[in-house]
Length: 142
Image (cartoon, rainbow, N blue to C red; front, top):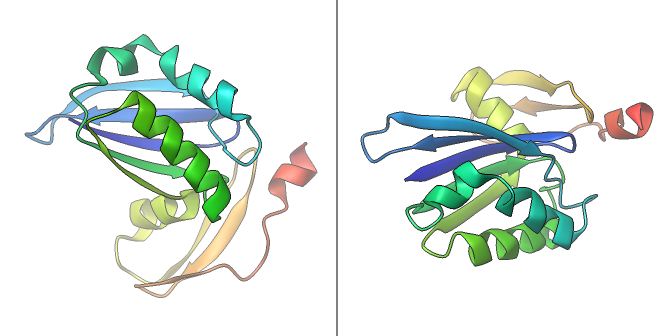
């Protein structure tokens, strides 16, 4: 089973996919931004979602795209938490802009934006993301 998550500061949306690439279920947890939510709370927000706990031993991969996952420190925190819960899974963590690029463009060059609790934008040249302006959305909304 593969889990794909889009995690923000307010909420995280999860999709479970079986080996035939069929969607099994979708679930939403509270936000999982490792740059602003303390470790214990991140852990609790995941383990308190029974749909995720029911399949935790079956999960072989997790692809987590999230706010706060653009620097090594927060990524390491979240990865350690996920590894302790989903012990049979290989964990991939990247910033939420990458998921937005994949969803909006595939591999085509484009300007991609995220509007939410935290807002951000980037230019994608077909291979690389260029962040030309810092995200100020979370500060402005907070």
